[in-house]
Amino acid sequence: MLKIWSMKQKQQQADTAAGATKKKKVTAAQLRVQKDLSELSLGSTMTLDFPSPDNILDFTLTIEPDEGLYKGGRFVFSFAINQNFPHDPPKVKCTQKIYHPNIDLDGNVCLNILREDWKPVLNLNAVIVGLQFLFLEPNASDPLNKEAAEDLKGNREGFKRNVRASMGGGVVRGQTYERVLK
Image (cartoon, rainbow, N blue to C red; front, top):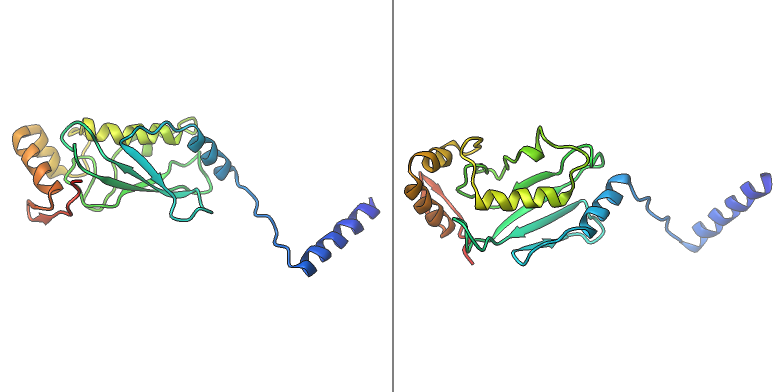
């Protein structure tokens, strides 16, 4: 036992002298994210981007809906995953201002599996499918943007006009939006 210990110390000293860097430990969260990413089945309307190739816990997802009210738009979501994943859900924000009942003007997303319904058995694919579904079926009954939800409930045609105007970079209800149309 003593011999093994001294051999290990000598190896460490040799590595240090040679300028070798220590291997970074892979965390449980990184392993789970790696597994989730390998199992993703992104359609042609979605792409992932990793700003730092060494960090798989922070990335962006771009969704370009090809049907529904938000068809023709390009929406970017940032994902920040903490070391307690999958016990904690990822933090997801829309990087652009969007006129949507379930996404507020600061980019916060109202998706039940990102809050109270999150369970460790859920994966990143479930979150991505949920985000995609928000563009197909905006939910006015659980809003973050109450004005957009009221329009969706009470005046669907006005809501459609406001979505188009906002996606084109227009002003809706005093808010200026960034152009997201392709």
